Structures are given as structure tokens and as C-alpha cells.
Image 1: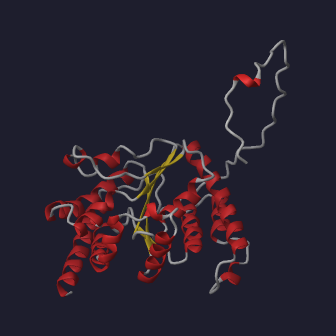
Image 2 (image 1 turned 180 degrees about the horizontal axis):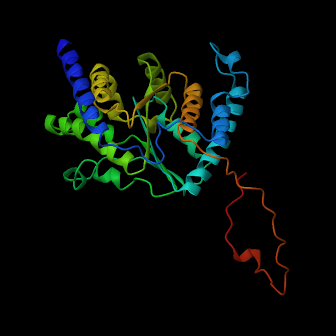
Amino acid sequence: MSDHVDELAEGTQLAEGAEAESEAEVSAPVHSLTEPVEVSTRSSILDSVLHPESKVEEQVGKKLDKKFYEKELERLQMELVKLQEWVKSEGLRVVVIFEGRDAAGKGGVIKRITERLNPRVARVAALGTATEREKTQWWFQRYSAHLPAAGEIVLFDRSWYNRALVEPVMGFCTEQQYQEFLRTAPEFERMLVRSGIILVKYWFSVSDEEQERRFRSRIKDPRKRWKLSPMDLESRSRWVEYSRAKDIMFAHTDIKQAPWYAVNADDKKRARLNCISHFLSVIPYDDLTPRPIELPPRQENEGYVRPPMSDQTFVPEAY
């Protein structure tokens, strides 16, 4: 345990030293997450997100009311649509990283963020196991290919941080590769931010007891068993090692230009609302909701004759 504390302390010093050395070189991007919100219209939008009109106080300490949750989710998803239009209009490039233990709820919040958005604007990058060729590449290379162009939001369902968590715990990388990642990741992310990319990183924190409950729920429900892999079960048996790896990762990569935001994920519904609300608050945006459109009259039928419906193959009407 003392070795881990010494390693963590040393890692913290390394991260702080590297950050201090780079601060002088890193100029704030045009759309910096640390810049104060000065535009009044944006401030009012952010205030409405952070301070909803609904009676939030009544939900404190209680199981979240389903109707309240659905109403708040609908409101936040409307704000996400406004953010989407702003990202398109301003040509912003947004990267959101979701990390955390298995069954922490990452996929659930990603689904709620994207389900009302245009998939051409907001897309999910969920990379599988690296191929033999990719294993020989620079570690960040296959992730770089999924970075956004102007007007796009990319949500990484797990990311390059596999090398800081799963790989070292499971022995899938060498110690040298692991240490090189811890040194390179902050530099890589500062480079992304310096290039104008807005980078937001979320860590979903779930307790041992809650993770076990969710695992057992997945085992019981055949529809959810695909979510449990042998790797998930193995990682649970190495809970403490995973915790240590997470602590070391934070010590090296929780940098000023791209900090980690921890989400208390024991309550799925609260975690979703809190994460979406925070995401909306870190990117100032104006309300560019598309205006209602007027449908044009349908073209007049001028001699068109539809072929017999019997010539087409229809899906059987089982319902």
C-alpha cells in the first residue's frame, strides 16, 4: 500500500510539473472551457440549465420521481438540440470522453444525449479490440481517426484511456507502454485543446455494491447478458487493482486544459441528468432552434398511375 501511495504522490508531482511547464506555452483556444461566460444571452441559457424551474429540492434524498425525471430529461434534450445547432453554426469540434467501471452507466447517458440529435452532427465512437496491425501503430493513432471535423460532436464510449485502466490491470501492455501513455496523454490532450477542440472528460463512479447489483440484473435478463463479457467479470475480481490504476490515471491526466469530471453514478437517472446538465454548462451557446417550417402543397397528379400493389412484396402483418 505504501508503494502505491509513493507512486501516486510521485505521479501527482510529475503531472503538476508537466502542467506547470506547459502552461506558459499553451494559449487559450478560441472556445476555451475555462473562459468566463460574458454574453448575456448565453448566460441566461446556462442559468436555466443549471437552475431549472422544476422543484428540484423536493427530490433531494428521495427516489427520483419518474415524471420529474422524464420532464427534466426532455428539457435538457431540448437544450442539447440548441447546442447541436450552435456547434454546426460555429463550426465547433467537440470531444466527450466517457470512462468508468463496467456497468457504471456510460452507455445509458450516451444514449440519452444522442437520441434526439442529428447523427451527422453527434456520433458515438465505441472502438473494439485493436487489430494486429493497429497494435503496432502509435497508441493514439486509431482514436485520432475518429476526432470531429468542424460542426461535429464525438462521444467516446471508452477511449484512449484503455491503456491507463484495462490494459495495465489485465496485463495487455508492457510497463514501458503504460508509463509512456501516462507521459504522452496529457501532451496529446493539450495539443487537441490548443488546436481548438473542446475536450470534456467524464468518469462515472459506481460503488462496489451497486456494480454487483447491476451485474446480477444483467445475468438474470437474457436481453442484457450481451453487456457482460468475460473481461467485465475479470475486472470485477481485480477491483482494487482497477482503483489504483484509476488513481494513478487521475494524478497524471487531470490537467487544467482537460480536467476530469467525476459523476456519482449509483443512481442512474440522477447521473444522466447531472451529466447532461454539466455538459451543457461547459459550452456556451446561443439558442438557434430551427424555426417552424411550412409544408408546401403536394404536387398535383398529372397522369401518374400507381402500379398494382400486388406486384410488391409486403412485410407480413403479424400485429
